[in-house]
Length: 81
Image 1 (cartoon, rainbow, N blue to C red):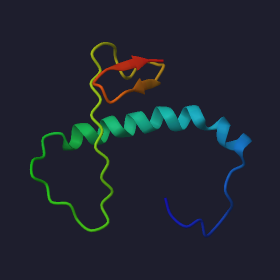
Image 2: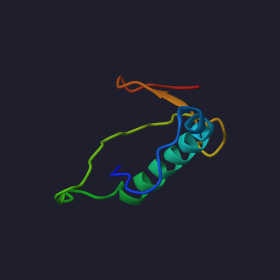
Image 3: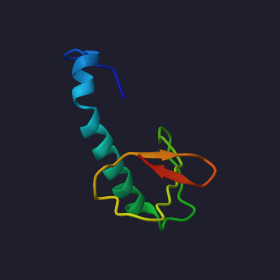
Image 4: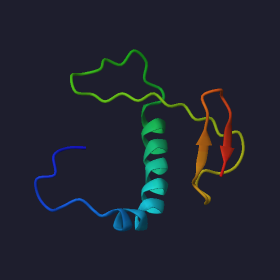
């Protein structure tokens, strides 16, 4: 996120119309990045890097099939919504 210097933020109603798209693509982006960097070891972090460590283990199902909603708990289990 950064400073919105041009345009204006969406209203809540406009934002809700895009929520499913954001959810779907957020999960797909996470999986793409995860698969791209999963084999890195002892990687050096640079100034300004945002680091969020999330490890999601999907025991069953195909993440490419809708719905894309998952409830994640930090006890090592998940629920598909």
